Amino acid sequence: MCCSLEIPVRIIRGGSSKGIFLKSDCLPVEEKARDDVILRLFGTPDARQIDGLGGGDKLSSKLAVMGPSDRPECDIDYLFAQVGTMYSDVDWSANCGNISAGAALFAALEGVGQRIDDHQHIAIHQVNTGRILRARVPMEGGQPATQGAFSIGGVPGKGPKIELDFSDFQGSCLNRGVFPTGEKQTRMRLGSGAFSSVSIVDMSNLHIFARAEDLRIDLAQPYEAFQSNSDLRDDLDALRRDVMLMLGLATGNTVTDAVRRDMNPLVYIVASPVPYVSLNGEHVTDKAYNLRSISYSRGDFSKAYPASGAIGTGLAAAVSGTVVSEALRGMSSTDVARIGHPGGILSTQMDVADAGDDIHVYRAEIGRTARHILDGVSYI
Image (cartoon, rainbow, N blue to C red; front, side, top):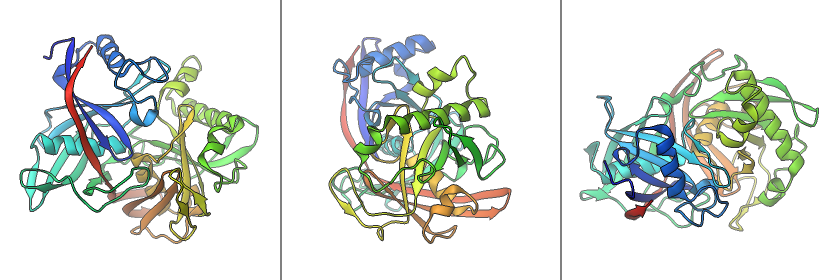
């Protein structure tokens, strides 16, 4: 067990997020003491997280707890937490697909997994969900490669492509199948009183997909227009609240705090492609991708796109009758889904058998990059 005042930390950018990585034996076992240490480590509560290692943004206030796995088929355990900024919240209820790329890099740095040719193959027990994430990390000699030609929207530069397969994550949040309501579209009332047909999908996280037209939103607008639209955020908060209540994720007494604190369910506004300008100033044409989307949770629109959300989006795109497949431009169940989001373009590769109520995912892959930024000691 590490000293309670000095904790070894590793900072890794995984995908379009950045996280603090700790070994499991460096945290107290008791839950409140554990969360108190984490909040102190990040500098929460404080919107700037000036007195800790957090980055003052939900994309950089993420934690991965890594440790040996007691599952014989897995090489390492990965437990994720989303840490609050303004509020003293530590949400252990979700997974982060982008930080999963960091977990794969962490495992490769630790030398776990099986080396096959020039890749380290790693089976990661994603502890939050109990599912197995399969990763392939490029290697050079005995270490993870540091140079590559792969780029992802929302991250400057290029790097080695880390391949993540989430095919084991069907129904991973609620264990009620891909469509936990039993429907590919569910009619919901928005906070404004209008109705919208949404698709609720349980795949790597819990996702709600809503049509831009139902929300009276033009997805050609810049990111700032969504974030400043308080009526839109109220509608999406009401949608998250009603889905939480409907699926038993919260009660009338707890739902207000859950909407503010919990990552799940995430909401995605989707539409057919339109030209738009990404946050880095790139002009993205409507021919460069086949689905426009922006994601929302915990009061904020994401400046990039959740990798877990990309997997959920790719699945919904490959299944007929969903809000996503209706908005999609020309994709079959084995094509690449190219998603235009505020950070740029993100692609997923899906292989899905769609037999009506029987959905089976054979492949759910996304390419990410990750970078090992720092090893050090944090003084608590």
